[in-house]
Length: 430
Image 1 (tube, rainbow, N blue to C red):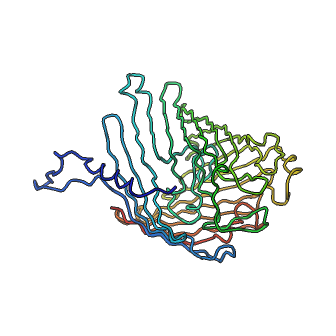
Image 2 (tube, rainbow, N blue to C red):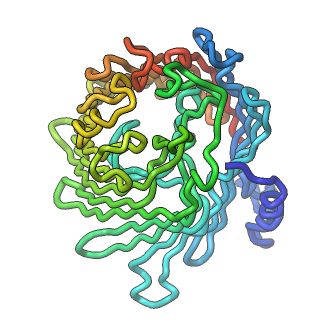
Image 3 (cartoon, rainbow, N blue to C red):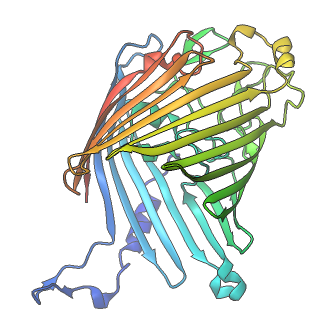
């Protein structure tokens, strides 16, 4: 999402007197006057990335070329808090200067409305939201994701995209409840050909450049999400609900134009200690509201999805985890009968295994991460390797590779084989 710069600058000027005048000059440990701590923090970052092989559909080998500055500011009140996180960056791949407000939100309790209000917390504004138990795998988390940033090698924080939402949380003896309203549907930052080409079932090959889905093919209706969760003993249980739209434009008009179709999701999860680690399980039912019988080839079928994962420390400083994730497409016979091209339809059961190894060395200043997705049903995968080195608090150097592989050019991961890339980032904090 892009914003004009001047409204943010006005907010920062208003934010400047966040500390009181009495604290304008404090005494340091030697009894001398010391400048006040700045109410602002953030970082500047340079990030570069390039393909490991050329993509016939895209003319440039650059996959990442960011010069970024992030500013953070917050102010506490008696029963609430106001927080701003804003990024201004130059995207050298698209040759564009952009601004993203990752957070501009007020959060506080309703205690001032009486004793009943002490049970409720409200957060309103631009914010990053997330829930669920998966590691890089999202079942009941229908908040927007930025897969272009993830594939390009930006910091993992950018995988979770912001939305303009209102979140109400209630805390009760029987359970805790989160209810989120997003007044205007916010989709994923999906792969659209800007940075990486993608397989088109209509063309039969990978296509680019980028496209945008605009109203009315992009809904402007609200979306709703709810979570009810409670800890019982060593287990945390949760129930989820969502009503909105598919987060990527996976449906099409009769003219082949991509669009977003209606979606409802119902699910549950549990996470607990087990043996020497953590065991998590999650299930979800994806109800494709515009294709109840599964015979519309232009709308995704309903699905059941489930996830089982486990994580533990294998040896000192080495943590390992594994997950199995399954998507089962419902009304599969109807899908095959109505399909425009059965060769490009997904398997009835798509099975993906993930493995993560994370090692910390040099007194925790170096973190090595290896994460691999492998689909036994599609015979393809995605290997992500990265290293983060931060010997002091002021800066961090990161580098890594994103490798996509497989047998079929149209499978989920292998369609991005030409997007395989290496990247490096340098971040300085202030």
